[in-house]
Length: 154
Image (cartoon, rainbow, N blue to C red; front, side, top):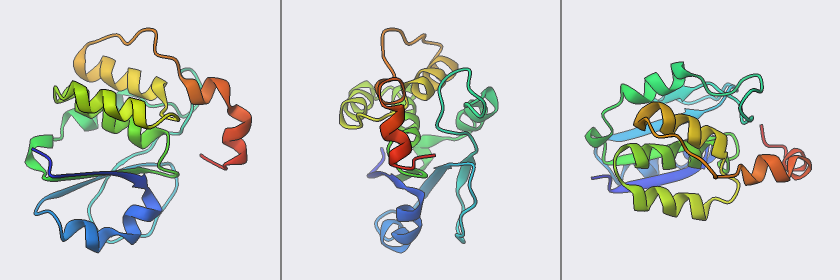
């Protein structure tokens, strides 16, 4: 079971790297970004944008196939980040928890991260679990495009 589970911005994860890895033996870093960052450790990079279904740069099956190829039980620390740490990273984390059968953890993440990109979450759950997610609004993207731009979130 995962001992440590951290969702932050990529910048924060890079900055906190030594502290984070000192607390676990086998860390897994997943970065969700189309930007370039300077770091010298292994990370799985999912290169998709924080957009809704149908928009250019949305997550694809290529990305979910990368997630399918990871044995998440092998890692005792998961460190998942996107550019801001608010939308894509909690969506990926929550979907992976659901995929692992940790539904309560998945639901807790959905409740905690009000800006989670629910389109990304739904896409991953559909591809990894075979479930179709219905009636879960993409609160942040649909309701606050203006606020999102003001926060300068990619």
